[in-house]
Image (cartoon, rainbow, N blue to C red; front, side):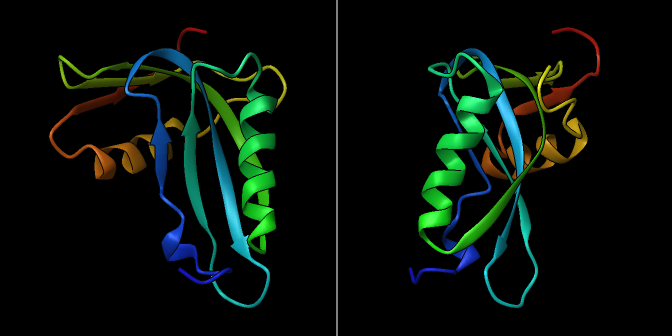
Length: 120
């Protein structure tokens, strides 16, 4: 994969199990061309900003520009094949969970993926 190629950037990377924070990030190439939204969620992150900073740092090294669109939480139960997206980020605001859910449905086509604005 060449630097600047958005096709090489996974739409969704989340931990395999647990409840954890996530961010929705808009990624654009440095040159002309459309961008795309990606989901990043990991239990190691104490704050939503930790997730964004780690992803942005990695992607900016490859020539992309990144902007955080908001955050929330993900409950991922792999044994039950269920993912639930909800909540918000104090620092970045509520992500468009419907967008995040579509990215997760594409990544996990055999899962039940749901979302709600309620909860933290």
